[in-house]
Length: 174
Image 1 (cartoon, rainbow, N blue to C red):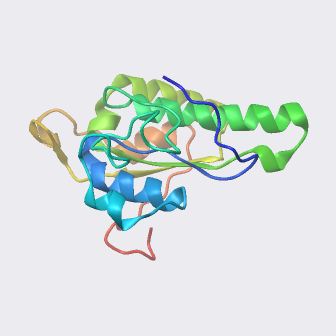
Image 2: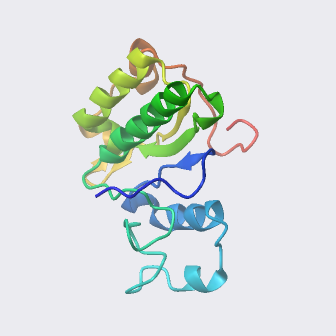
Image 3: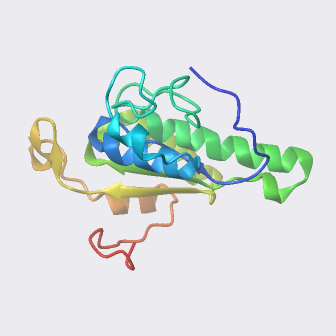
């Protein structure tokens, strides 16, 4: 399900990540939308709350699309970045090319759909798309080494992405 673009002509777009980062994503959505009221955070994961466990289109202002399985949000981000680039080109207005930010986890990048979307983004050189990869080496089934041992940074380099390694526990590094 998709929602029309927010009521702004330009600006940053945030990809709210999935259940693993439920509280984080709700905090960021509220802060991003300038609606970070304490009462909403206190109602986290409650019925009809604006801070559901998994942000849903139509329930939380600023949520433009609802994703499903792991990796699907990654593809949505690629689509948003491409759409922003196409809009800027169509109207000859570089200011319309919004930057898109998101966080992805091991589980997201284990899915084929995220690799296909990453390949397209690399091919098109979508420099307005930024993902932070949380390499915490854990999935719902246990440690990632059970089924996922590739070097993700090298994979994204090979797909044409600009990659930077950072210490996620060091704010200045990130």
